[in-house]
Every structure is written in structure tokens, then in C-alpha cells.
Length: 363
Image (cartoon, rainbow, N blue to C red; front, side):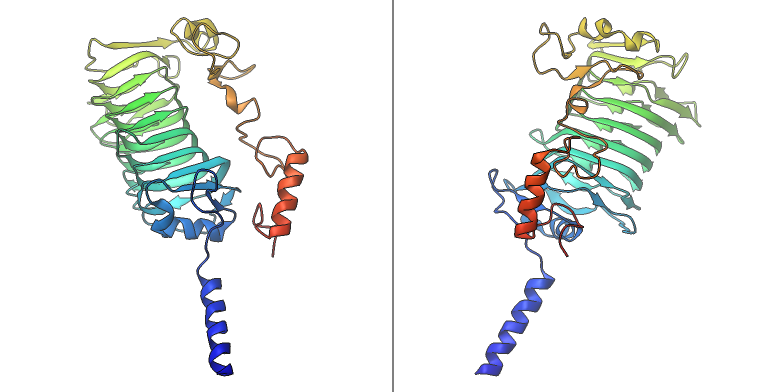
């Protein structure tokens, strides 16, 4: 009897240590918490955390250096709600992509940064291969790195949902349709911008923001992507490569691509304008088009945009007001660009519960 009991205890210990279970219950009030690399691996490989209506939250930066992936990092379809909590996933490498961090998103991904990525392959994209539902949402996300392959997109390859408040700074090289926010758009892209470079290596539709706006709606976005065309016989434009949807109140930096058209095959419902580099720094050029800037109320009170003291165009105000921190310093556990008592309280709580706010706090 004792031997059987001991064996049961030992087996239970082995199983419990081999199969991590994320803290939380998956509700909006108590989301599953991703607190280290082991938790992230559990999240990405277990469908229970990706099911419809399930909430998950990233609690620390994740460094994927040395990890190698040959398909979307979070496997399978994602139906849940993933809150990146303004944290960063860095140094992810992906070949034969068929997606990005996620494969297909049917739910929500928000408040996430991907930096130092190197993704290549079919439908290579930062956040996901496809935003695949009209109710799907990608919100307040940032992607920085290199992308190459077929139908490349900085945020997604194919959008049928809503992308809002996102920006991508990518060095991209694409075939077929490619753009530094999305390769193809059937949904809504609003309040987004793109920078970096995009090299067109074959015939196709290539645009600084979107390669092919099929039946989609793009509003209050801009691009300052440098287009490099190795095959100048097809659609190759500063903003949208081929435009058969709706574009309103958008801009592109005309000095980055002198003489290059902003879009081709435009419908009548297109208001997009090329501005010089100097004009890109004049706030009234954007507020006159209805953009919601901090400090004005005529276009709304969400204060989405602001003009930086130095830069090349408008940026999101939440980058600079402490709610979204691109480079949190050591000790900034909450990721708000401020080291204060809130960081100490969270660190102490995680020490006591050994939930570890980052991968170094608990053994």
C-alpha cells in the first residue's frame, strides 16, 4: 500500500512538473497569465488557451533567441483574447512561415510589440497570417524586423477583420501582393502607419501600407515606406499597390519615393494625398482631414495621434504618455516606462507567490 501511494505521489509530481498550467481561470477578470518562457510555450501549444472567449495576458517580455520555428509560433487557429499588456516578444525567427506569431486570428490580439523578428515564407507576417473574421481585431500592436516571402504583411498577410492603432517598421521583401501593414485587405484598417522598406521581387501588387485593397476600407493612415522595385512592370505604389476598395483621409511621404504614384486603379471613393517631408510634420494637414490629435477636440477626445518634437510624421500619443513603453528600463515590471511603487508591489506579490513577473525572479 505504501509503495503504491509513494509511486502515485512520484508520478503526480512528474506529471505536474512536465505539464505547466497557467495561472488564472481564463476569464476577463482573471485571464491566464504568461509569466515566463515556459508559460509561453504552454500557451502556444495548448488549444485550451486559444478557445473562443478565453482571455490570456502576457506579464513579461519574452526572448525567443535560439528558438526555431517552421510554422506559426502559436499553433492552430486563435479564437481567444490575447492582451500583450504592452510587453515585447523579441528575436523570434520563423521559416516557411504560413503565418507569424499567430496563424489565423478569429479573436483579438492587442497591446503587443514584436521586435527583432526574422520571418520568411508563405504569408509571412508579424502578428498573424490572416485576420479571418469580420469581428476579429488587431489593436495597438507594433512590429519591427525583417520579412520575406509570398504575400508579406507587417501586421498580417490577409485582413478580413479590423486593424486599428498599429504600426510596422519592417524591412520587407515580397512576391505577389505585399505591404508593410497588410498584403491584402478585405476588412478595416484605421489609424495605422508604416515605415521601413519594401522590395518587390516579382510581378504583383505592392504598397507601402497595403499591397491590394480589394474590398476593404482604409482610413486615417499614412506610409513612409521606401519602395524598391526590382520588377517595374506592375503595380508598385507608395501607399496602396492596387486600390479597388475605399481609402479616406490618408497620406504618404512623397519625398521618400519621388515620382511614385500613391495608388493605382482607384475607385472614386479615394482621398489619399502625397505630402512632402516638411508637410508630414504639420499637424493641421492631418487635423483638417479629421485625425484625432491630442490637444484638440474637434475630431474627438480619444487623443490617438500627436506630433513628436522630432521625427518624420505623426505618432501614437500612447507611446509617449506612459501607457505603452517601447523600451522599458530595468525594474519596470509593469511596462509603463516608469519605475515606481507599482513595480515594487507587483514584484513583491510575484515573489511571494513565486509567479515571477519575469524569468529571473524565481528559481
